[in-house]
Image (tube, rainbow, N blue to C red; front, top):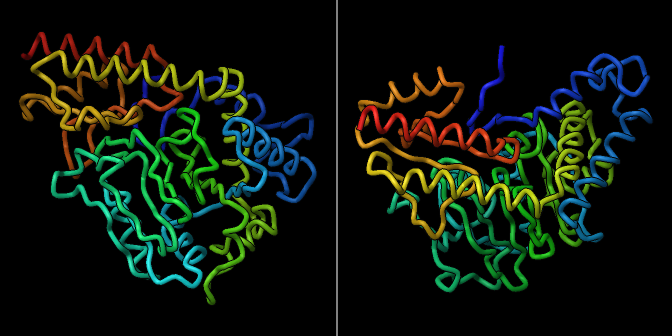
Length: 360
């Protein structure tokens, strides 16, 4: 069966080259006679895989030496609790930006552990815009500032990094990490679930500045304590070994493709093509302010909702899979992460144009 173009928001499409290599190595990794998923996480073979994955990610993102890199379990949602538990210290509150579904969930979880000050809230506008940089004002005594640079469901993306002064900036980069270069030194903590741009589900990457480690609140579970994880090289318990290995293959693939600057050029070009097709037709509509449209997640609606099922059925027949929008917003959503080739976006645009011609 031919592979489809998978526009799922996550778990998402993986590079074909990565899947092919994993297939080749499935039963016998590097002459060991065993699969990576059968290896001891403390054995020299898996340790070599883990160390190379970390080194490659550090190189790709130009991560400064005073940052720890953790490969954890629990998804990005576990970090909604880990962040306040580790960064609260002697503070009483933290600033949060509410710009979509995932930042809203982070706020809800954060309120379990400290006072949450919502400094910006775009929910009244259905999360279709973002505050301007000069509209934000942060508490200099806040424990940290938390935001979600890209909201997967609403399809909004910050075109800037908030300036927070001495207050640590925390970012949930699950759906934008590795899509372009980013200045890691401007952040206290970056965390990301793997299942969009990193690899298969089951792995969570955390990048944390070293001075923020070692201040967990009393009673913090060891699995959520950044110090216990850092001290044990992300192996306090058995880590998600196969997901870690797969992430390493993706990092190698990204390096072979020219790194994050090269990916940024491709990703911007893919997004522009898709938005041009939407904006150039009165059959489709994207509700997001053009100044903050996501490169990674592109929601759109048809002029007649009654055509949604037909659109999805015909798209699926054309090899364009998983285009249904999130249940909370409806319509369509095309997630075009790193692994989505430009040919996939071209195929979607051609299909959309033809569909509009036939049903418009």
